[in-house]
Structure formats: C-alpha cells, structure tokens
Image (cartoon, rainbow, N blue to C red; front, side, top):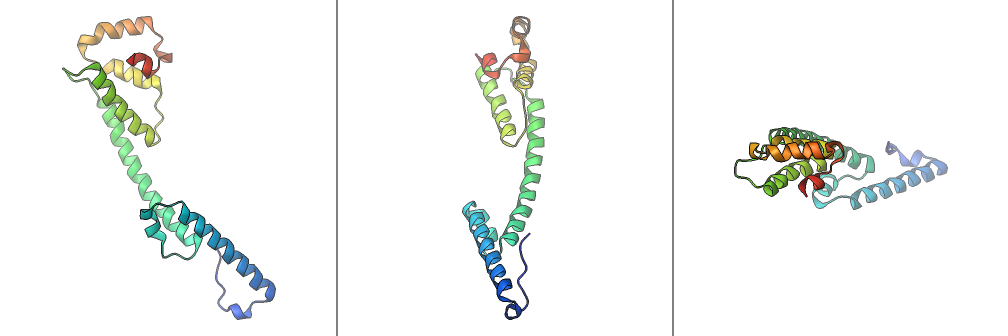
Length: 153
C-alpha cells in the first residue's frame, strides 16, 4: 500500500518520527528487493522511482501489456496448431518436430496441452499414405494413455 510522506516532518512527535523512519526503511528494503529481481530493461523503467509502491505500480502496468501480447501470441499458436498438416514429402521426424515446436511454444505461454490431444492431432493430420499406420496404432494401442514419445518411438 505504500506510505505518505508527511507535509511537515517537524510537526511529528518522536514516536511518529520513529514510525516514519521504520516505514521508510521497510520501503527502501522492498525497493531494493524489487531492483534485484529485474533485468536491465525492466530496471530502466523504474530507475527513477524512490518508493517501492510506485515502482511496483509501473511494473504491474508493464506486465498487463506483456499479458496482452502473450494472449495474442497464444491465439496465433492455437490456430497454427489446429491447421498443422503433414506436407506431402515431409518425413515423420520433421513433422513431429514441427508439431512439437508449436506445442512447446504454447506450453511456454501457459497453454495446458495433454499428450492425448497432441497424439490425436498428429494422427489426424498425417498424410493419407500413413492411414494404415494410424489404423494399426488406433486398434493396437490405448491412445488415451499414449505419450507423444511412445507415438514417436
């Protein structure tokens, strides 16, 4: 919540001055901790702030913008994931790699993707020449418990 600087420090009692010093000390400790957790770019945004609350508010507002960018990027990746199809002359290994790159980017942005969803997506989007393999996997394996590594192996 921060603290307010008094208009006239001279009008404060000894007890009030001691409390003010304690608040200032705590605020400077908090500001120091905030500084320690920042990279150079973020530090520059708050370098001129003298109170922890003011610095925190700036960082919080910066994070809102970052969250919006993450949400937009995640939407783009979701669409990319849904539209993924194996190319005509693409190897299984290259297709798996392409799918996993998108999946890992989504997970880094906080998306919760189960192995089942990824396995089903891969099986649905393989070339028609792999239909017999897909049918064999679906008949022989429990897709609900299959990991991506098992499918890839």
